Amino acid sequence: MPTKKNSPDLILVLVTLGLLTIGMIMVYSASAVWASYKFHDSFFFAKRQLLFAGVGLVGMAIVSNIDYWFFRTHAKKILLLCFVLLLLVLVPGVGLVRGGARSWIGIGAFSIQPSEFMKLGMMVFLSKYLSENQKNIISFKKGLVPTLGLVFLAFGLIMLQPDLGTGTVMVGTCVIIIFVAGARISHFIGLGLFGVAGFVALIASAPYRIKRITSFLDPWSDPLGTGFQIIQSLYAIGPGGLFGLGLGQSRQKFMYLPEPQTDFIFAILSEELGFIGGSLVLLLFSLLLWRGIRIALGAPDLFGSFLAVGIVSMIAIQVMINIGVVIGLMPVTGITLPLLSYGGSSLTLMLLAIGVLLNISKHARN
Image (cartoon, rainbow, N blue to C red):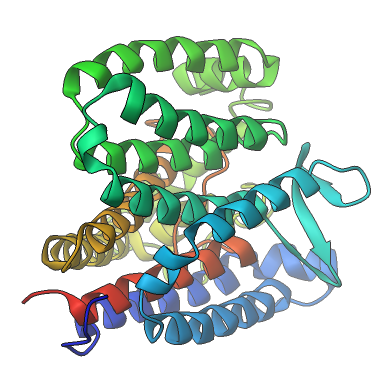
């Protein structure tokens, strides 16, 4: 077990708090009109996000002071709990349906999204397994098949909700961890071709996914239907120009862009703060990823290194997909922008993951 050496990474803490602060401001700005109309309280979403942020920050502080080997010791229990929650969410009466997906479990006035926590649970387990069995990962049968089999079992349960976005992030993160652990590139090429075929089959199996693809290629072919969100997002980003229309001055949040405080919050940010504001957010994310990679490279053991790589990869994948969707480079999918988008489970999970990263940084070599 590693011995504590350093203080937590201060730059990582400051960048996280900076992104969280920007997120809080933008959640209020983006949601005020919709919240006033639906709940007669312009601060409805902002207050809830502040509560989520408070819980997440307390969790981050606690986790950052728990030796990361604690998660290694309890990796199997954590993964088992995540699988149980994924199964519970599929039970009618337990799982809540929103937007056509049964992805939440209600707890009083709030709800949790088990698929979000599966991302971290799977990372912890894979990091432990691969750190103890790294020599087997070059073997297709002994290393790659068992690990990917477990990952795709979780992916299958997530797809029963269905939640393609979260499932894609989890699979992408796990594939990066496995690759870093030493899996053969030739194996990945073969599996990649199989994965593309499977992904195409998933899209073809659901008509709404096909419509999302066609609307991505030509959103103006169905401007009031499947292309609506992409078009309104681009209408928000375009007028923003270099400096934006000004904080709080978005036009698209006036019932044009649906629920702009969630997946499309970057569009409202770009409209109000312009290219400069959007670039600042991307710079902060770049700093966060740089510190995470530095922590992964300096981790004193393979478990810490793999886990840090997983956390950094999860954040990077979500940022790329979310912003890619918002600017029209990817089909619409339900992926939140880490630390900025409204959402309790997503925000809490992200802050807990950063707490783990901070603890690893205490042991990392300078």
